[in-house]
Amino acid sequence: MLRSVVTGVGGYLPDEIVTNDDLAKVVDTSDEWIRERTGIRRRHRAAPDQAVSDLAVEAARKALAAAGRSPADVDLIIVATTTPDLTFPATAAIVQRKLGCPIGIAFDVQAVCSGFVYALSVADGFVAHGRSRCALVIGAETMTRLMDWTDRGTCVLFGDGAGAVVLEPVEGQGTIADRGLLGFALRADGTKQDLLFVDGGPSTNGEVGKLRMLGNQAPGHR
Image 1 (cartoon, rainbow, N blue to C red):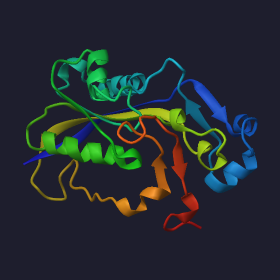
Image 2 (image 1 turned 120 degrees about the vertical axis):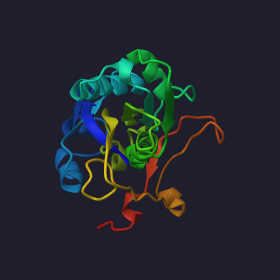
Image 3 (image 1 turned 180 degrees about the vertical axis):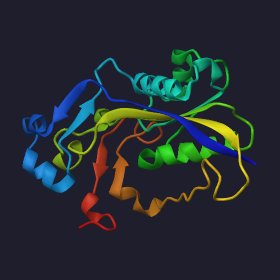
């Protein structure tokens, strides 16, 4: 049987660095307050002219180079993002164009924090069944575009960046001794919607909205 194997990994972070001290100048917080609660010291922020596809392309190029592949080899692109360039076309299709990949399968997966794992599982369904020979799975976000910079409980947590992997098929025996992706355990709990959401959307209020979170009410919070 075929297994999906990660043959290349790449990442990209925008040049601009936002430190905790930088945030303390715009919101009621401090480096000590942030570090004690999150461990975060700094995060990266995309330039005004950088779209999420630009971050994704940079990460994809590094992943392809690590795999010894070129854009011409790619027949499947899945981008996991909740901050797409446009409502449509898919950011994956924009990445396909910017990379110069041939016409192939390209679509997005929107599952926010779990997006990359969901996208990886979907790509595995293509690669492990012989429907793709070289897949790009990319997680990319410009979460700073969704921040309410007056809310110290959320704006200190998020930054921008992208990560990518190349998936290719290899022969396996169907046992746990195989190399590659062996399985997934995915789930979601829609009843917790009010704990983490964005208060905007094209079919509700027609706005982009801002990220809202009640982290202190999440299960396991201490």
